[in-house]
Image: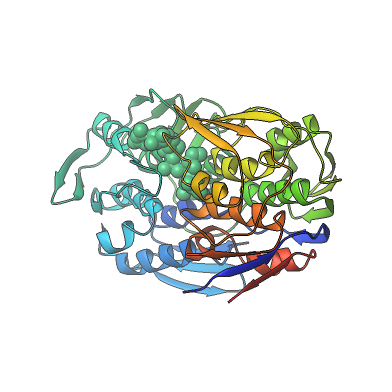
Length: 415
Ligand code: EPZ
């Protein structure tokens, strides 16, 4: 089982090229199922999750060629609208096939995703919305069985959900009649999915706002290329890492408009970020005061950077509070950070942190994609050599992470 060995103490200098966004490419890959055709997706990150999604598309009957971060997906011969438990249990995003399979086959059988490292992750919003679209949804031995042609409807989410907004957008793209989504997610990854559906032929307005209207595809366009947007979470991860270790790093291939919240929070720490089109330059002394942070839906501070931000705050000057508003209990990284000498107390989904002067290397264990990134950042700042195990988690969401970090001076290796 691979491990990462990280020797702390190096400041980071140099350039990093940010990969395509995992959370953008996964729904786009499922959207190729909606209309039989051939689609060339570019700037695809090479990740365990994209490999898992390729396997799922192939089980459904698609032909997928993958080379140099480009996928060519041929969905003309898809004939098996099923997503089996073996795959869905390893990657919740498999649930994104529900909407596309309904749009195309008016039927789908998708395993109910299990929980994840930090607790339950229900899909009740997805199911309620599809039922409002007159789809019959039943649960049979752990599988969601959905039947019927979706009808346009007015869907109001009681809480913003990226996945549910995505599934409804895709089901609505071939529904009978117009769909309106109220309290829609505004994440760039959902906007990007919407652009893909517009290329397929749907008429969509309001992407990036809380109210989206979708008129279904009339004239199908089933053969085109599409570029995946840069990964704002990977970019934010490296920005926070440089802030923590100190140094100066230029990130290339970023979409700086997606990074406002991170830039604003680092600015409060007096950490300089210079933005120039698709590049961003971060400079830090490695010494900074603490500030409070709360996670919010986009454009707020992303929950997917909460663990990384915690790794920054555990050695800040002063105390701070991190409030996780998106998930209940997304704090499995705390117990690992405590092993490295952090001072963190968790109470009612709020982490109370007292900055320490030193962190110490210790064997630690990854528990989810983003917690893993937080451990790497903490290890880069710790005295000694930290051994990080179960790094298959990190490989799900970060492409070549140890090479990207060692290219900017980190002492990190995979063993
Ligand atoms: C997406 O997950 C991302 N995954 C997550 O990133 C991200 O943390 C999350 O959005 C929030 O930004 C992908 O895009 C593949 P949600 P998703 O539905 O769609 C509750 C990563 O590390 N909820 O927006 O599953 C849910 O429990 C991953 O890249 C319901 O209660 O998230 C959570 O509290 C981790 N019922 C909140 O809503 C539902 O039916 C937001 O979840 C759906 C969601």
